[in-house]
Every structure is written in structure tokens, then in C-alpha cells.
Image (cartoon, rainbow, N blue to C red; front, side, top):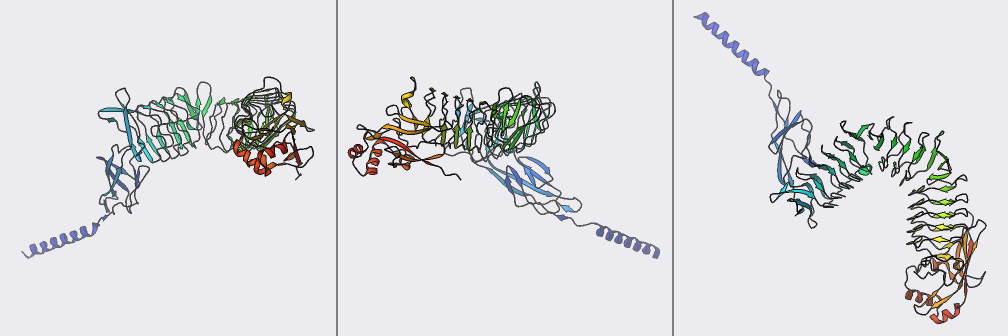
Length: 635
């Protein structure tokens, strides 16, 4: 009995001891803190990282997901407007931590702001509500009143700058041009999986857009579809897309472009998209490395991609198409020896400073920061630092088109012809001197050179095309040489320049538009270099009907007072006798009264002479006006 009791006590002690050991071995679990500080950005929900958490569980719209980072992409999961609770739980090591209490963030999709109308095909077309435009996440409905939504109207949501994200229903398969043009806050787009075409300018100028996956059925990406979307860094094109336009991504800053291997028309390599049939590079980007099998660089292939240095062009490339590198901030270009053909406007809207041709090129050579053809010595490409070399015989079509920062240019006497649009919209160009060797100026040569003020023409010019100086707002008075025998009615349209010409020597058939001097005539002279300038006008007269003085510097068709020009001199004004003192100050013709009507002009004349009109007229009647010139001081 005593032994039995002793054994029982031993067993009890052992049990107690084992229990104590078990209790000591069991660690108490730590409960994690609930996630906090929620914020939504680009449809991605973020929260502060929870200490001890290894992952998070997110519950939304009846579905749960584990994520390893303190963020969750909701884009595409919310398909209806209203308030949507998003529940987040922090999870850690199961042995030492307990999951957190759930934290809830409520995301509200606001009023959608669209209107709709029937298309006539059993569905609806939608557009923005101009009185209450959409904002935030825009959810295009799949149907309205039991009918499918099938189309976005042309310019339907254009410039809706408060849309931040966009989701299309499966029913949507038709879009008007520029449907979402200029939606500058739009960051993400989910397209319909059945969409077969991205239309012209559909997302152009959506400057914040960075996420837009192309559906697998897309066949065509039209011109300008993603133009000026600099936030779009990556592009993956599906196998079905067999019609691509080079300008679809103009103005972007793509860092990676790729096309599906199964695409029958194009393939991608080195961040380039290349057409299989002729090995032409059709789309490139700032990160492109041109493959060795490429034969040509396509039209506008690298246009406005933000490229600062020309990519290495391999020996296989023999052709560079028009505007291939237009709109990029490059400053120099070396034409490779192997390139024997290149298009015009190669560097349209660029600021090129240096041009040269590599040794061994059989078609072109360079001199004076110009590229010329060996066959006929035509300048085919120039830049802001170009000096036309004596070897040149012509300036080719669009050779300097839209050349940024070109301030002045002298066309030497060795040049015989200036091709169409040669200096088109060189908007900083201020002074042009065209020497006596030039016989013909093509169409639109200086069109839109809005800063062009001084234009000097030499004797020898015979033909001037249409719109040569149109929209040259700053042009002053121009002396037209007697040699010019052919001109069109709109050569100086919208330039507001006074044209001084010796009309008595004009051939028959000149357009009546140029009436300045027809009644009164001009006397012209030529300096030692052959440049034409104004010496005097014929008699002054007075128009009793409209009440203003008329002479050569006041064209019948307007009242823009621009001073004549002479190389190396400044126009001081008009004298009433040869070698006399100035009667009309230069300011009178340089814009003080520009834009005044006839009656206001008459009042100005009376004020100028402090006499009534009749007395002022009698004082100037039958006088001849002589231009007074003051030599410029050499600096």
C-alpha cells in the first residue's frame, strides 16, 4: 500500500512536470495591426506596410486574392458605378502571428456623365454630357434599355480632362475619330476583347496614358491612334495586327516595343518593328538597336520619339524615307556611306546644327553644313548653320523645310532655282537675300515664315510660283526687280508687304492684285551686287472720294504701311526732292498707324501737317517722293 501511494505521487509529479514543460514551450502569438492609410492612385489601392506581415488578403466583389506587397490593382474588377468595399487583412508567420482584423476601404465610382442615342442598327451610340462631363473611372455600359451600346461617337469624349480610367464592355466595337482625344488625365484603358481597329487619333494627346493593352483581335492601328502619349512606355502588338501606321505612336517616349512572333506581316527585334516582306523598319523608339538585316528605315519611323542621338545605322540600310527622324531633339547627322537614297523633310521640326556625309558615299557629299547630290549639285538637306557652297546649282524641294533656329540665309549667284517648299515654315527666319543667278522660285518656298522681315531680290529673277511668301506676316516693303516676268496672284497673299515695282516695264498679263505702282509707278535701282531697291515714286495724288493721299507705298488694296528695304542701309523716310530732307518720317511707314481705315488715315494726315486736307494736298500736289537711305554702321 505504501509502495502504491509512493508510485502514484511519482506519476503525479511527472505529469505536472511534463505539463509545465509543455506550457513553457508554447509561445503566445502576436496579432498583426490592421492595414491603414489607404489611398487610390491609377486604380491601384495602396496602404502602409504592416510590421510582421508577409502577405495580405484582399477581398473585392465576391473574390479574394493574396498579394505580397501593400498594394492591389483594382483596374478591370469594378464594372458598375456605386460604392465598392475593399477588405484587406494582413497575414504573417502562422506560428508566431495572428492575422489582423480586416480593414475596409470604400471606393466610390461617381456619376458617369454620358448621353446616348440610337444608331439605327439596334444599338446605342454614346457621347459625353457637355453640361456634366464624366470624371474619374468611366465605365461604358454594355447595354441601355435592353439594347447594346455599340459605338462611341466621333470626338464623343474629346478633351474630357477629368476622366482618369476607362473600361469598355464586350459589346463595343465601333469608334468615331478622336473619340478620347485630349483626355489628359486618362491613365489606363481596358478595351473590348472584340475590338478590331484602333481608329484615327483615338487616344491622341492623352498625355498621362501608361496602360493600354491591345486586344488579341486588333487588325489595324490607324494614324495618330496613340499620338503624343509620352507616358506610354511599353507596347505589345498582337499577331492579328497586320496594318500599322508609322504615325500611330508619334510624340511618344516608348522604351520597349514588341510584336507577337506569330504576326505574318511584321516581326520585332532590337526594339524595332520590321516588315517581313521588304525588311523595312516601320516603327522605332529611343531604345532601338537597328538589326543588321534591315534594308530601309520607313517614313516617320522614329518621328518625335525624343531621340537625342542618331541610332547606329548598319551597313545593310541603303534607304531612309521621308521624315524618318522628324521632330526629335538631335543636333547632328552623318549620312552613312551605304545610304544612297533618302527622302525630304528627314529632320522636319528638328534643330540640326551639323550635317555631313561619310566618306565613300557614291550619291551624296557635304559642304558648308549642307548635303548635296553628286549628279547635279543640288542642296537636298540643310540646317540652321548651312552656308550654300559655290558648287551648288539648285536648292531642292523641302531642303530646309521647318528648319528650327535658321535666322538668315543668302542664296548666292551660283544657285539658279529654288525648289518647292524649300524654306517652308522656317518660323525664325528673319532675312533672305536672293542673288542675281536665281531665275525661278518654286511654290510655297517661304510660306509661313512669320518672322521674315527683310527680303532682298536681285535682278535676274524671272518666275515666282504660288504662295511663295504667303503668311509672312512681318515682311516690309519689297522692291520687285524688272526681270520678274511671271508671278501668280497669291505669291504674297496674307503677307501685308508693300510691293514696290517699276510698273511701266511690267509685261502684259500681270495679275491686277499687284496694283501698287500701277497708276503712279516706281523708280528702282540696283546696287553693285544686283539687288533691287527703291529710289523714288511718281507724282502724289489725292483721292477726293475716299479722302486720303495715294502714292506707291499705299497699295490700293489695303492700308499697311511698311518701309522699303535696301541691303546695307536703313530707310529714313521720304523726301520731296532728290537728296532733300525727310518729309515723311520712317515711323510713318513702320506700323504707327498700321490698320487704320481711310477716314482715320485722312485725319492722321491733317494732324501730321497741322492743316486741313485741302491745304495739305496743295502743299504736296504733284510732288515726287524720294526714298532717303542712311548707311548702316559696321559693328
